[in-house]
Length: 340
Length: 286
Image (cartoon, rainbow over all chains, first blue to last red; front, side, top):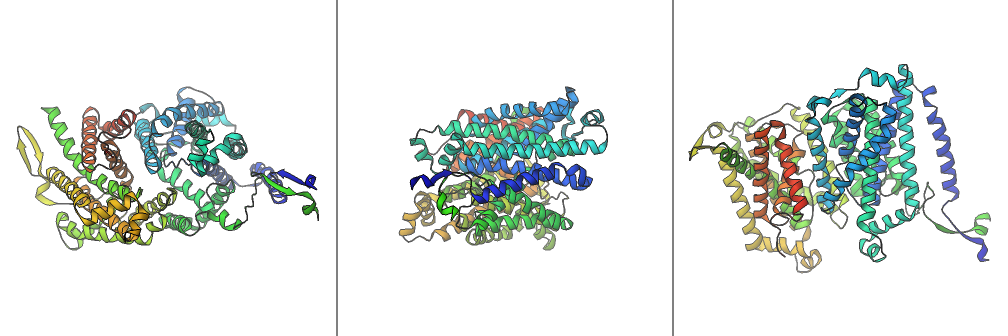
């Protein structure tokens, strides 16, 4: 009898969802052949926002590190792309892994400093760091100072010959980083460290008494997130081809909207950022004609969701059942029952 | 002499920063709430003063008689209707809701007043100055500094010498016990936010007279206020004034080396103090 019981992560729903996701990925990878140029750019932007949302969700939703300063790494990554391609003469694709490492390297001392602040003060501390980055890069005249600079034609041409080719490469890089980030978060959350992270989030004292090194676990998450966010930043400005301190370190574009996405979708879940990103872009594309009003609407939606449905859209969908699209949690299942 | 002058001007600027910080420190002390929209509310107050001075022909300093109660009312309403629903162990709901509020205020101001920089005209007081020992001190910065000291003295008195202050401190220490003693937590929080935004209202009027402003400048005002609070030490109002002065001096000294370094110098001093004295220079002993 007890042989019928087994422990697994996957359910019928998650298997179907993963299959659909795989099909969707194949379709999206082929987008340069079936989508127009404008659509391709939009898809690229969606994947980059999805990556930022997944990373912020890992930081705030899983590690409890509510940062409002992730624009520091987006901007840093963007500027490193410009510096290493234009000043050091490297190929843009070669630059990407370097940006990842540099982002992580700069995140380490930042973490040592701002981990001294707790809770909400930690949040504003991260914003100060982002401001220091913004003001610092505005002083570097080789990168255009306060007015910024454009990616030189040679660098852009080195990406691929022809405009369609370049757009496709930029798109595939965006898709690739979204898959990389989502995959990393997924496998991290299934690992020992991921479980430790969730234990810390749920009860820091209990986690500590089980022997989890809280500081080290959070430090690791912050540094990895810093590196990956820098990589996403490099891709964002590879798509934009132009950078300036105000655009690169914008708190609204790279942090406020990302937080809204995660909260609207459902914080602390893998599905949340994906659903939130779709909701964000649907809202944006529908209300695009209203300009500023759309931002007010976005702020209102985020406030209402936080007050009325703090678990976000995904929380509403799954209600009291703890269904998951990603096979993440372990559960005991009865095979015989499922067969009948 | 030049350097003494720089330090004096920085000290006076610090008075303004201390006023940005006082409101922030107050609500954090009472209800552990960090208001991301704090800077945008300062800017909103400046626009209220602008509207009052244009429509009613008032001097903005006189208009503050209208702006301060209006902001206090707004604060009470905001706390009772919205922010009280977010209070709890989790810090994310208040953070997100005030973030949303910040985006809403910025964009509403953008629609109402456009992105053009505005300035409040307070008349003669802006040009007049007194000379002390060869250093010329502007009357207006001096007024701001004196008002900042008064505001902090009043808050200090309110906190430690009145029934309302006792209620604030009791709620801050143990919300549940304060509730059992017959205090209405929701009302106390409303009053704390009203008081915080009243100070913010005054700070907004001073900001608008001192420099030009536009809907996007709120974020950096929040950061200056925050830095003053941390430099001075959490929960210490006089420390907050000292923190504001240190930040102001750091900025004017930085600007003396290079105009682009003004704000950066302030941030760097903040980070250095955070690295060396993480509890601030004058932490409350308790």
